[in-house]
Length: 296
Image (tube, rainbow, N blue to C red; front, side, top):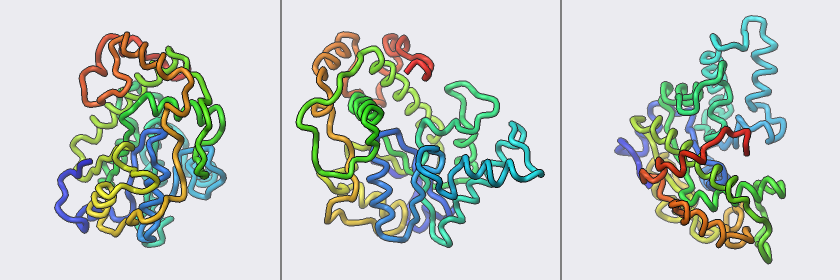
């Protein structure tokens, strides 16, 4: 984990004290992390405001478009107004804190939610451009094991259990992964992560965490807790008790054909536990695996 260009906790929120942006890969532990940050009461957790499946929260983006933009004759929902709409919306989110900083979780696959017209896959999305221009502090949360990430996504889709709240783990394997679909998923997730890294590379206030270093058993790992406390300038829960929500079990408890998937990835020259820093993600085999999201 790393903190960039910040010397003290009080300075980290100085540029924009009202809003902190959590940029997270799907199934990377963001629910767990948000619960830990919000537990102390100094920072307000707004879940995922760009996720249309999280109920009818007053601050949800689609509700904002319907109630505050479409209903206002002075606004038009088009490309010319997109950046102004985003600025107004993030201001709306910041006010949810009632004087406290607000933590906003935005998934990698939600960054293009307001692309009018659509842009290329590697182009900087409007949402990201607004975040960088506004100078919000950024917590970046990744999951380095992309095979485990894929298995967790597939299980959540098939069962509808996006957040596990019990302590039980499946007695046996619960799903079989299709190899080609898995490889495409890993390729697109890896490329998306590379793009986010590229966009935030020069941002002055970034804390980077990974799923693998975030959690120790059921608890927030001490190194992650200390890094968060320094970055945010507020105490973070000490991890003395279990966090209220659990993530999906590791892939060896989820996937019936895990050994086959690992063997085929190795046969194609791909690591099943990839290092996202490696140029290996740009090799020919992965490039061939990239397909439009609709194919998933």
